[in-house]
Length: 367
Ligand SMILES: *Cc1c(COP(=O)(O)O)cnc(C)c1O
Image (tube, rainbow, N blue to C red):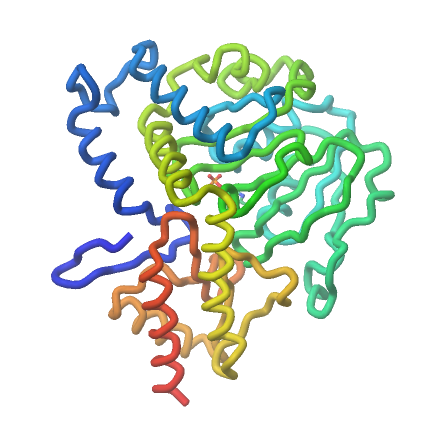
């Protein structure tokens, strides 16, 4: 969002927590003061209150609507972040001696595979066209014969740290599980291809504290005994995400984001926006020798544009000049380095325009 700092706007391109649309912030500000008939702050609603029930129902029905979610999928509003669900997905779905396949194409999928390996057998499949030799290679990324004997196949649809969007996969023939934290609700989605989808909310769906899990009914009832009740997908589905106190405020904000996305034209419109915004920055990069993007076009993320300059000193100058111009959080992921601009759902159009102009001017001044 554009925030007032002294007399000019500042824009955040952070990979998380992401910018929220100004309309959502306005609504949330009022609700934080006083919500509904009671006049209490929305943050103070007991989850047994019918008012919270309405917030929950509204958020769930907006989500079902946006995704055209088939009725055999449960929507769980949980906590822990995607990182906790790296372990919770296998703990809920497979026995310790079962094997699950993990398609690894970047930092987050590698982390998911590592955590899964501590609670089940995890077969790591390097995505073809990823890793150090990914340059020049293109999809398909997966040979499905490599999945034989595995209970499910896990993918990370958007590698937020690397700036990669996983190309569409073939039908894998076993349940497909996706960490969609990076690009959830930024493009059209054929949900029925997936058996389970999870996403932290702080990128495209509001603020941290909420992790969404969408799970098909036939995957429930497989969990191990030691799964803590708040993270037991089967129990949470039966109790409508109220085994313990749900993240009331984060769920309320997610509901506002979902309704906002519907007003903006739903997922087809979100996809047009994401393609246009990232495309505008990739154009700047590709049309100059000054900026470079390490990811080949077929694999480029539409929400996280990773790029770099020729020297570390130049990158430091770029970041300092950007900050002075009100363009914040353009650092790359610490494990990857370089620069990165994230364009999640809440990032306004004018932020992208400002960044594009800034990139042109910075390059012109240094060449
Ligand atoms: C940000 C991110 C995560 C980590 O989310 P947390 O809420 O910090 O656990 C996991 N996976 C992907 C793809 C991400 O973009």
